[in-house]
Length: 122
Image (cartoon, rainbow, N blue to C red; front, side, top):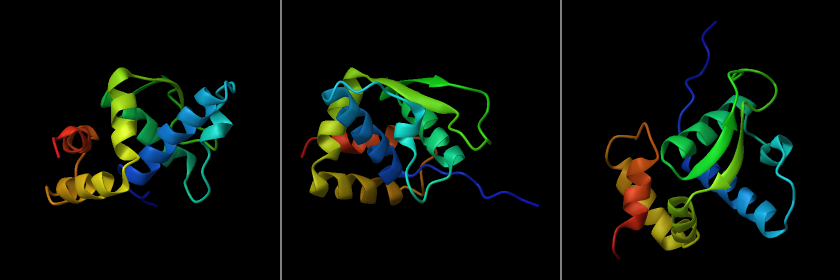
């Protein structure tokens, strides 16, 4: 039995950051269950949280249990670059153009190219 390859999901990454911002704005305690999204397996969510950490967009508590029924990661903060990324990601036109630019580069293994594309002067 082979498992499907987990990949970066730009929309999921943006959803994770938007959810954290919502919790932060409402002064709600951040719990792992806040980052469960319908249609997404826990390992995909955890993988994308880890990629957000690697891109220095968020901070998170990471566990070694990546393939369980629970999340193996929970955001704990958004970095300065992350807040800038999130602000740019809310502009749908800019977001779509950045994704198109990155996807034209043969599918990224990190969120850094998307960050660069979003931060590019328009």
